[in-house]
Length: 76
Image 1 (cartoon, rainbow, N blue to C red):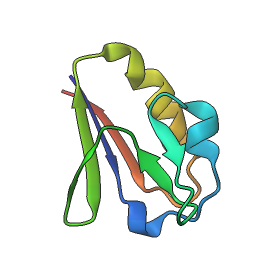
Image 2 (image 1 turned 45 degrees about the horizontal axis):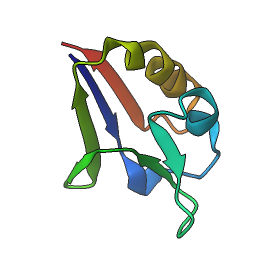
Image 3 (image 1 turned 180 degrees about the vertical axis):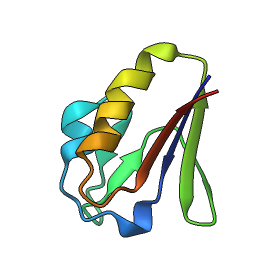
Image 4 (image 1 turned 90 degrees about the vertical axis):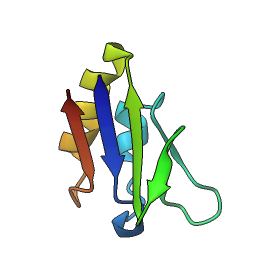
């Protein structure tokens, strides 16, 4: 299982995550911040749990590209 977490309120809108992993991230037209698609929000953290292992490496690259380090990616 792949677990991805985004701390959206700290997003600076650089768009790197969308460029690297467009199937997981998108930029909001409202506030210009990143959106983790199909995620559930809890206390400012947006999380998705998926059995689709193919999203792991693109999401890991998005984590590495993020200049403010607000993306976490784990395999459990």
